[in-house]
Length: 285
Image (cartoon, rainbow, N blue to C red; front, side, top):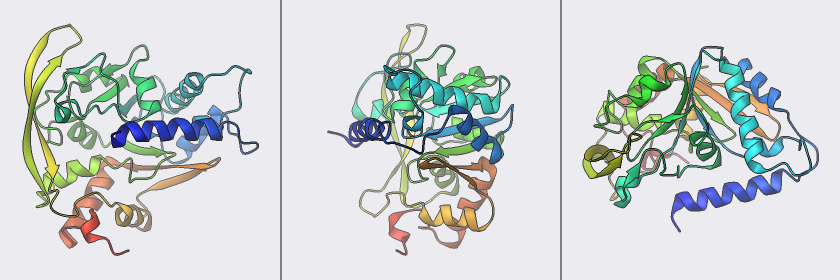
């Protein structure tokens, strides 16, 4: 079983356990309030990495309340913070081309969690056409995001570049930066780190119109001969020490936010100081 399938099974198991724990429940309005307290405003563009453990803390509205209903309440609570003029972006990564699979924009499931997959299939959500790192989007700028050309996963014209130019908020909701730090790979690509290299992946994309087309995309993959797996603990501490990240407790979980500009600038400085500051090779623990 692959890592991402194990992650989804683990997330489902944790949701089942946590929704049955007594005490320490939170309401969806608490999620909205926590996001507002850390600077998320109406009209904001937010990239949210969310763990279903947050939804597991909602008390049951009725005895037969299903997990999907909890996830819908969580998504609604996030969108209540950004309002109708905001834009919600959630990773819907499929890694399709890395696995030799066709990428169907409308039908290929997300491989990165229950919140992601639930959001992907909701009404009014569009999905970017990156066959490796796609995003589900809803809100004012969603159509613009989903129309971006897909040539390089972490390039300047990618979703990550768009988020950077708009100085979007990057939010880790119930998870740490180790899971919600994909934006860092965009910084690494721009900086030209030597532990990643360009690799082209090709395959078939099925677009929402039903059109099938052959496509190639460049993914800046990591050098597996080195300890190049991400270790973002130093980055997370640096952001906190510099007053760039904002956090709030949320029942048994936590939420953290940082702007794309602050995350980019901080990660860039750390790479200037230490070229392996963001990977296991540079770990000081």
